[in-house]
Image (cartoon, rainbow, N blue to C red):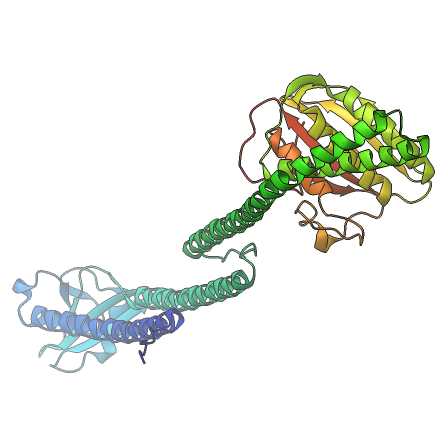
Length: 452
């Protein structure tokens, strides 16, 4: 048994990153705070040392103002005494330096006072005003704190988006396991959107491949059935047609004989019709199995269809069905096989129509040939039978042979066309197309109507 090592979660990685960033930012803030305070104290201490030196050796004071005043504040030597130093002269009572400072509006000034033996007071002050750094450091600390908080929030938000996107992809793949045409909701992140698009494209390609595989399997199965039917038909045609021809000849001779009674001639005529029907059945099987190639000649399709409708009209009138026929077109066709295909389509339409129903047959020229449309007001074809109606020997009627629509499909294919059916409103429509080009062996879809 092979164990797969579980990879770390991307969401956990982002959370860990946010925690580490938070700790690092907090450490940096503390360090900055101590650095700011420590730096301020060191600068004050350095300034005090320089001022003490200025009191001991005024001639060496380079960076400080210095002078001497008496007890009343009168200047003895040096520049005028700064106001804040004048206010602090009372503190000048020791021979040790006394330091005073003023911090006003972020400006820090430091001064040193020391009493002289003669009662005067020596003073020294920083020569330039040095801006304080506390406010600036506070702004830096606040900015770093806000930046750290924003980084943590952004990391958590990114982790949430990644987690949501992965969940959407997981749901989409689960849906594709049941149906390859299912839609994958695009995640919020661009990278995951690209992955979702690639998965959807792969699923669409796989779905198309499966459809093509099913279509090819169906076509192969149909070819195998037709091949088997062709082998059987070839044997039947050879074994049956010769006896039928002999029987037909003898019946015709008996009909022409003067010694044959009139009543017997009528019986022989019915026998001759039945022999002709059997011969047509053998011809239909040959066409259906592809053993008989059509002999195509340019003919008026509208006239042929009108003749077949005229032949069917007495039967439709007897069933109370109105049969109409219209249209014209010229196309290369085999009259015998196409007549039988039209007969089967019209006969099925009449049988499917209820009393007082209508059957409409129309002929229309197309860019490459012609089409025959047969529509009826019947209940239509059940959904579970829709894909089987053109298969040989499939029928829903107890007395049917299952060869009518299969023959129509074979005739259409032999004429380089197709036959389709669909439900349009309350009518069932069959469309048989004929092409002037040579027929192909490509499989066709029987549930979509071709474009004229």
